Length: 229
Image 1: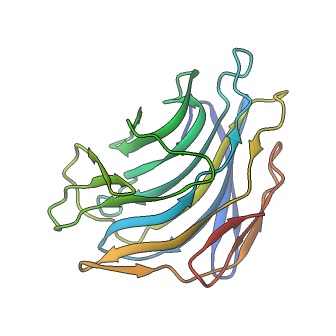
Image 2 (image 1 turned 45 degrees about the vertical axis):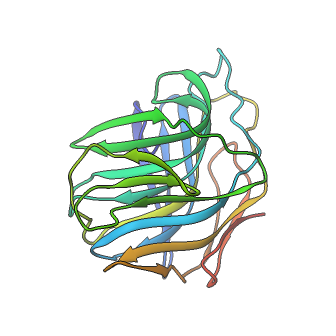
């Protein structure tokens, strides 16, 4: 999801070898708990084995901007601010206030954010490989969940340079809302693709959420695994 309207401030938290960030919004809070891969150029794929969590964003007509996503983000198009993402979500889709629960895709391209449903069924507690890949270095970015091909992004752009790749949670919760529910989960075999080869992440640190409404601890270790406890 990454961006909603009504942006008021950004708080960056830095670590020795990694960082993550919280984004505060007027009228809502957006919070990230992500595993990060830094400064890899010419990356033409991102994937991980996502265990689908039990999530409940406490969306309602009163709190219609609430959402939780469990997903991956791959930057593209050099040093621009463009990216692609896919994942699983509960709550408001496409910053619309319309409720949706299921798989989705999204992109930020030339400053325009667009999000859409993916026609694919997944089950809580089961594990699926979420993949975005330009398999033949043709600037054609394909989407897979497991072995199911779900189309491609309609943008012919190259890989990123000097940017950050992410997998994990994002939550956006309105003030006064009941606590969202994020069940225990993990992402294993976190991998990126360079020169036609998939490589494990391997890297770095731990982070505790401090924004309102989220109180989990996320650990990132050297076995290319993201875990929520």
